[in-house]
Image (cartoon, rainbow, N blue to C red):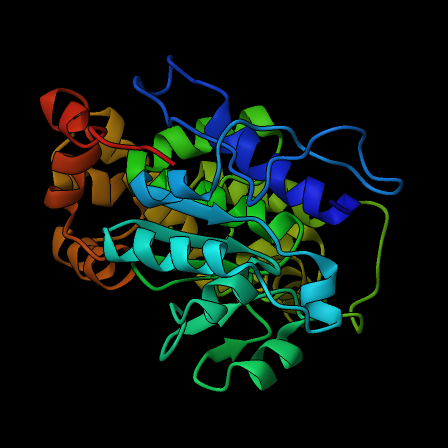
Length: 324
């Protein structure tokens, strides 16, 4: 394994492998599998991982994560082992959720699991992925793509974004946000955020956006405007717009909506406030407006979300099977 492969494997282990009983119990049961468990000395370059689990263990998993494939597969066109590809197909047919990080998308594509689907990968590899697998709709700009039972991400830290997104999907926003704090990363970067940074925006050392973004996140129950946030940041509206979009991949209004929805999710999970009050405290206006945004962006109504992730029996019922 090269350094980048170790990094992405470690991301999956950091999120799913360390029990977090104070956040959710049971946590995920993570097993590291290898096509051929290594024996003897490690490689002259890179790293090796020792494990007692092989590809047959993939078939019984609830979620299969492919962090990467060897560099020779991506850059020299070498084939993946038939047994590994077959195990991926069998796992999917058995109902597993399939996840790839970075070049792991080549394995899901080889298994035919990305045909007719959008997929993400590191932008350095997306052209090759699209050329070799023309039935895959490759998106070379986004951080990750959630297609329901098949999820793919770009490389490096985008893999962490996808793993936290999975925790958010399984256990709710509060748990995902608390785990992100422990990992010292952003609680949630949406999958549609760009992999790229706008280099036309001047780079500064003062992190001048952080105070106003933090202030806005603490005052979501109040009317907030782009002009007002720009004034608070000491910038023109145009400069503020460009810098925030470069930093987050979203327009200021989209960023605000994302913050309001995330706050509403946390309130639904951790309080018994009626939906009308949750909407008010989140700055989403009326309950009807909140329901509309939840249905559009979260995929369920606020009431259904609370039943899945709120405190009490409903929450326990939502964490029954999380093998990975």
